[in-house]
Image (tube, rainbow, N blue to C red):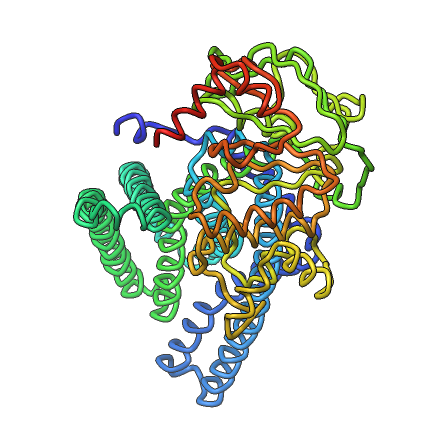
Length: 589
């Protein structure tokens, strides 16, 4: 905690944070006009005490005529109207710039995150990335639309007001200014503690959000293990810690506000006492004293607000740094590459490929893998869990970069392909099918953005999905729910297959696509897969060995290496190989 209290915002940090303001450049004229309106409205506010002072003098001094009172009142009313008009345009223009700039930042941050390689997401929690787009940008928006205006107003108002004070009474001005240094010092001290506690509270609050997100995403697991009470207790502990930190911060804020109120009104009492003595000595009029008091309140409020503005600046620096870190990242793909295309035949070769995941660089998952797959061949990968089967198809889709060796397609190194154009030629049907929460039509069309209704229907028919789609009252417009929860496992798989058929890939990757299905669903999905595999180079990761008997080649993996290669008949004929052992285990089940 002490470390947080002592932390100061350096000039470099502020400079780096301010660079985020480049996003307002497309709206610079609206921003400049908004600043002008801010300065004018603030300056007009400084004139209001003059009007009040003259109004009081017009009412109290016999030398003033009655019509003078009306004239001053009208001028004061007109001044308030001018201030209101400029305030309206200041608020609207700042909000206009803020909303457009924030929309641009949100878009760029989202695009930057979504174009990162797969290992980027494996090393970060979803809640953390979501927070960058929501919490951090919301903090920036507060800085753009509210804090910037308040900060400028707090700086401009004292500058404009102090000359008016000096024209009223130099002596009284120095009395007033003498009370502010102590308030500013106390405000800085309190502000540091409050900021540190607020940060701790926000961090704890973020942890509660992570628990909520994870438990909602894995609600089926929570329910299956009846851990609702455990999760509620875990959430409750963090929630209670947030309450404790916020209440501690509230004590400091309450003490701070109480001190400011005491000091402010104490200063006003001193100024009134001294001012009345000057009125009694005819050095100033009563109206001028009221005018002086109003200026004192304006200046005091501005200086007190500077501490809060500084707190917001510190938060903004932190948010800006986190967003800048994301925006500074490289990209795996460029979103503008969507139109790129390349025609491939599907001749694939792995040449002495070794690979370790970025999170475990010292642990080789694949070691010296070499294989050749001809266009249109069906190649199956089998082996114990952790032998590297799924890793091979991930490397083929260029989801990771290999440490040594080479992978080529049609004789061309995979690294020379544009990732977008390469993946346009690859279709994937995973074991755990991911469907989005929209309609069946939208989920199938995800394989080819802009596909016609006829193409979507044809893909669904080839995937043997139309039979169950027609059973739903809404047909293709049926909402599948979060992650496709409203559909059975077999139905989700056939939607995924329809999506892959619509993509019309040259290379097909099937990652245990039938392992979690019952016999009837497996039969239907297998029929759909047979249709999908026609004329395509296919990599099949199989759990049920009975589904790969017709593969042109079966590759048996063990501990990251290729142990056996052959057809089903060739491998079973050996009698003592790993494939035969795995086959016997399945029959024993």
